[in-house]
Image (cartoon, rainbow, N blue to C red):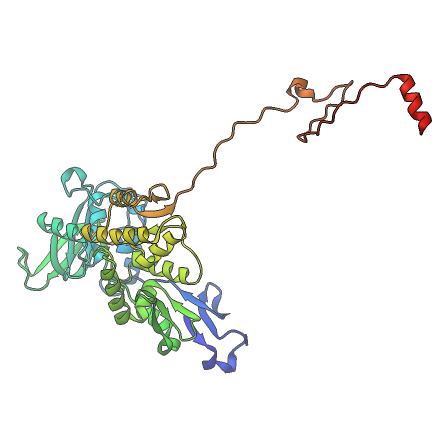
Length: 433
């Protein structure tokens, strides 16, 4: 896929009113899609594949990269596929080797150890909680992250002697369909291993980053038009063309303006007291950026992430509730930012956020959904007792043969009753007329 500008292709441009077109590959061939606006939210790029046609021949990689229904796991799998689906959680215990030193590899180690990633943030790395044996290997671990989840994975892997420095050299298959991984030691790290060492396993997970070259090819024609866009408070929103018609969000924005995007996003994260479990290009700040952008376009949020959204967006969200004083909003947001800092890197707990709502008298106006999303409390309408059935004395038939019941809520003004006239009086009054 790539983006093309009309000014560069006047000779074969087919739709006059569209300044851009996407060239896309479909099952039936390459197609142009003409448009006036393009929003790109594709992520940084596909996972780097260091195995196919290098460590393994292409056919062998394709075979080992398929889900094995009998084993109930994929013998060789990319780290993103491992952590973002539950299909690798169903098998019995196995031996796993993770290759890579970044944040995704850290998440793979945690999920591999516990068997899943549901409410495991506070679980201990002990035998009772362990489902699989996990070995973690990388050239270095400098990009694993500084947050609680990453550092706990690193420290426990090291303490359990499951962390090694090495560079993958080759992969071999055994007769019983297991894998033999050959590594070469890297750096001057002290570890009791030969220069070339091997480890056997049932499953090999590789997580060595993403390839952003694809994204740069997508925007090659408009690359010089792209600019990093921030709001008035310095929060990164996106990377946009000069005419604001082509916009890259989240990790896609980082792919096309990596240095500027990363510097600005790190600066914003620090200003908001957001901890080291997230970073530029990851999903939480990307969601916050998109939410802030859509707000500035006129779309009001229905919920706020107390640990991730911009403080200015939290203020605007609370100002929608006219009963909350401005000073209360300012004080509450200041306390939220302090709670983020004090509970770094994971952020304020649900209990802490609720205590702050109570402290500022907001608990009857704002409630918490999930772990930390603020939503406006819906006050249920008062329940009215069911009305008694009209004409209940008639039973289910609701009609009589000798009467026509009339029901009205109109009150008739009562007039003074006139005395009854005799026949003679009536006759006299008629004669007078």
